[in-house]
Length: 195
Image (cartoon, rainbow, N blue to C red; front, top):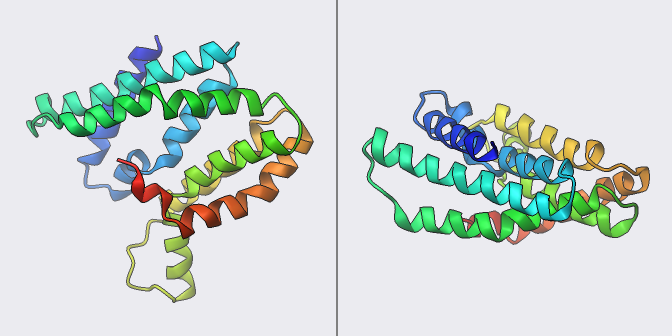
């Protein structure tokens, strides 16, 4: 069943990419929606194995559907290199993220909070919030405004650090560690290294 939802998500993401609504394309292109999806799959899985397997199946199906829609329906041709990179991520980083969400959401303390802070930082790592701050403060008025994506990034980060954990100590550590984690993501431009 998760494979079917993955296919639907992949087709929806590619369809959103091709709309004239920039905000819709952003939602599927920036990491926040996908980090939230994988974290929720992990959080609500009954075991760590299920968290890893379910997220890998969903993400692999989503990636295949995304590139299949682009190639077969939109006639863009197959981008085998990018599809391969996303499938590798489906088998490595995605299950690791789901496993981190599964483990961290069930435990109290610094380490679970730090893991959830890293997930929130990935959601904010696309840099849209930083760009919006630059636009609003006037330090970077030439950038394109993306207020819908900035709001989505913030909401996803809050869900990851406040709603996913079962323990208040974990929530507090996650909130406290999100800011330095985001700073590291932005300073080292980590998200630009992703496919």
